[in-house]
Length: 431
Image (cartoon, rainbow, N blue to C red; front, side, top):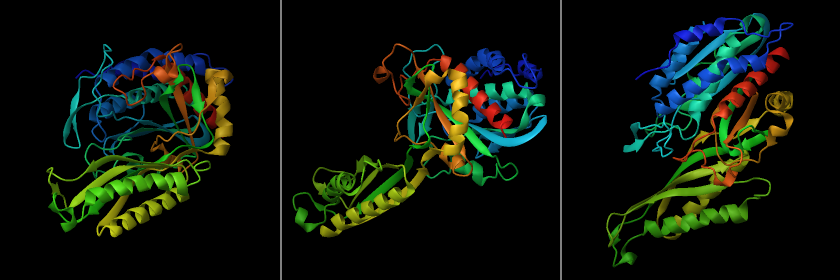
């Protein structure tokens, strides 16, 4: 597979044009990397990789960082890449994060650089596509790294670039993945940032817009498994056994009563969804066991714990009423993503500088999840959305992230670089 020519990137070490009074000309710096960011994005889009298997992507990133004169650490968690840029003046520390993994989705965009890659996910053959836009995140952060390297002598403080694997989770159940694994493997042992920044391209905003919200604005994500154990019998004589399928149906309806009647959803939005029910092998046999799997989304840790306990009690009591048993297991995939209020107030003006004040939009809370939150639970975090739907296209008609038709407007790349670059420099200069 061909990778972009890396040697040319050494040009990034030259001073950025337009420096005045020690302050970088960020517009010039962003324009200087724009063409390469588009090239990188298309290359990465053509060669997507599932979580914890981003070996080619990691190599592209590491080669780029070395060409900038940095010393990247590789094979973290297990394919993550981290590097630190030291400015020429003392100042604070900041971390910038991009996720690298693609999704088990077969691309249907028809783009000339569309993915034709195949892979395996949870034992099933699948197409592989950057259907969430992580290819854009990687390309944007590569561009920001190049721009910052070109102004390093004028830059105060230090910047850590984090290229993270498996934000979407690993393709094999039980694998440890994502931001937590990188922290567990010590990426902040010797470099504790004062803040961490990240971004996500988003189809529910138009190109040219940035989306922000202070405090909690993306939900936590839990994956749950409920196992109902009954007693197998002939389908013609259900009274001779204990039917776990009927219990599973009762529990499923009961979970919705939890949300509708036991949680104040005006104050605490909650989603409790079953995505799969399995049980039985034949039309006239009541099986021993039924299994449901699904997701829980909340914005408050205490509400999360309360709903889990109510779910467990509901399942246990429905099962006991029929002579069955219920076992609930909950795996936390990501805590709620929140913007530190003080950091939000400090850096929101940076986004207005990059996009124009009228293009910075306050977004509602979303029940999607992001494991950037793991980093932001350690130090103050600032996370924002970059719109990708072309102007003139109604947002409700645009393919969502994770769709096989998701084809983001590439003008979002330039704005993403400009916004992240502005926020980073403003934080360092204000430190």
